[in-house]
Length: 425
Image (cartoon, rainbow, N blue to C red):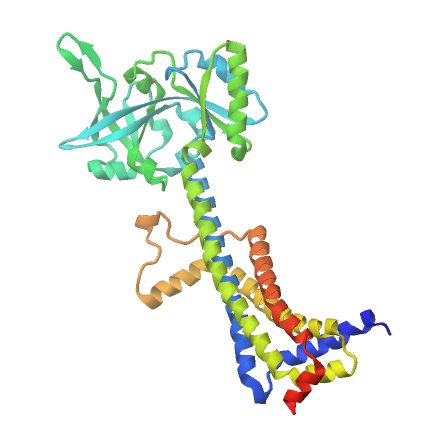
């Protein structure tokens, strides 16, 4: 039987035997268990944390897309006069699900002695339902409450709380665009009735958004028959930037004028960039825990090599090659890393799948609130396990574990039989 055919079988058998701690050398077994536990905990925590970050990212994207359109197309001077023709030109594209006009501006709401700046968004209720799911986040009203000429508006929940108003109350809306008269600058203002509240779960909108009918907004903002722009809902939101540019180029070619375009990734890109940076930092920091466990594998194998010098010498004297001795300890260290990694992946997946129960259990045990809905706008931690993250974490841990076995295994393979037996004697 050739060397290539015979070395794996007995090398594997001896490596597995060295993994089992004997009564005379339990300390080596204890260090092996610590190394395995370190890899297990590092992998499990890293998978659980990345899953929670993925869940936050998905939840944030969902909440943003509930409130905003995927993309917008506006006129260069803040108004779009021929918006109906542009809607016909661009609305028939296969990438476009729906198009809705809107009017946007800034103003100030006044209720008694309280006032707050507000972003105004004039919409057509029927068309708005097709480009966003904001109607699903209304309390005490529907979009159809906004009717032209009745001067009603929907306020963000936090904004209404700051002004201390509720449905049915009246507020004074002062728009930012004033009118110059011989007597000076005359602000345009109008009394509105609060028709309902917006509870989107996004502080930016719950604190600073007011919806009103498109006709009322156009009248206040002096737009006439024009609008501020068009809002689009697309089949692929992640390609919104590319699609809206193509739509603008098509309209610009047909109408021989330029447009301003934007999309949800541009306006809210900082949220997702911060999540990605946080994920990268957490990955590096928690990877250090796995690296420490890999150093424990080095310590374990060094002690095993020192303890088994006599066995190594006897094996070499009986004809074992350095390559076969190298395989014994490589297999031993790899087994520690593989078992720790597999157990860590299983534990990490279990934690991610039951993260809500884990958090609630910790809250009851510690008597503290770890996830405050008033701060994070969610009552439970979201978690989303991605196969790529699991493969990256498991693969990195396994590579570190295997790399940690190389030096002790080479040291064992370089053992000289005569030298080792003389020290044993």
